[in-house]
Length: 259
Image (cartoon, rainbow, N blue to C red; front, side):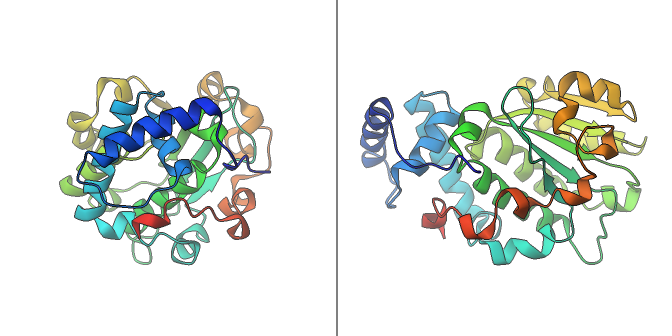
């Protein structure tokens, strides 16, 4: 059962009040719920000034890239989610973090663009931070690059790479605690070199390359929350549909104010 936002503590209410004072003095003219504001507060460890900076960044991104950040409803994301490129473990890892799996091993660029995948990842981020536990504990991402080819590398243009990096580092109110790369081919060095200049030292230190060594992955992520594909204890990742954990019936609308 999802630990969705239901109520705020007295401390949270005080933080939201301070946050709203900062918003009132800004150029932002948008009706936002207390629950949404707490996503930004949690993402910046209760520092409302840093949360305000993050919100400003998010607002700029929605204006500059509306196709990626607005109108993200279940019906729009369903096509990509049904392809099982983006999956989520039903179990949290040892630190209480959600485990998001981005499986690009069967990615067909003819029917699904990189923009489609990125837009759907943002939708999944929105769903995951509707949970208080995920707001505070964050997430880890497993990237599976099996069967990755030069043709797929070429889908990553410099502008899109910059947008992706900015989103996870300075825009979206989610705490990215680890990125675990699996099955990376030699050709991936080209892609890593393209991303590297944009990555902060914090993200670089949270980026791990495991190849085909699942034992190395297990040292970082508990196998109890991983699929059998990675020698984990759960069923194959093909059963880890995003909607199994975040059903459409429980769709959180806290980000709909940006639509």
